[in-house]
Length: 248
View (cartoon, rainbow, N blue to C red):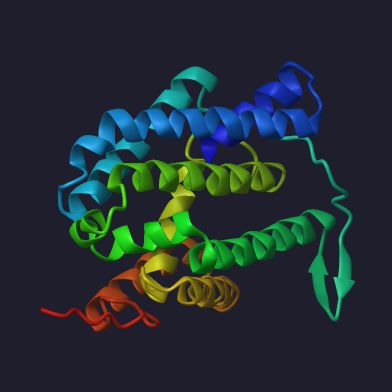
């Protein structure tokens, strides 16, 4: 997320390249970097337990955060807005064109992801590897290729999010910590349920907004961790996790 925003900021502001070109070039750089990280750092852990990969990913997050801070500095940068920031009301809801673009892109991506995982051959292969790597391998699915495809897909999705949020949040070295909320959403909805993750995202947003309004603005960041702990205690598989039946 942070790297796509920093790359797009550099191309757009420092080099004064067109926005669309800066966007796609930044996404391309992030894809290449993601593939390099997957090949060098995570592929050796392909047979390791899930939590080993999660811890390794968090370590990489810290490394990338420090690297971005070293290259671009600790101060936040203002990303020039590419849409009107003048607010307007829809049924009492205050929005900007930037908000609409973020919401519209999110809906498009969610729809494409649903179709991709439901009908595409690679999408089905990713789901098979997620459920059982050994069984998927025995069925002729290349686990290594699926890992690479996952990281490419992740680079496109997260890279787009970083660039879309940059005009609203600014560009700074700790942007990647927002992924923690994404992790909370995945835990809430269940890692095996795309629809559950979508519902979990809306629920977390509503709860954060209400907590910030009725209790304190500081609660907007704290509430994510509180919800994470409660979900892990009450229902570790997630509120909307899909049931999986294993035959012996």
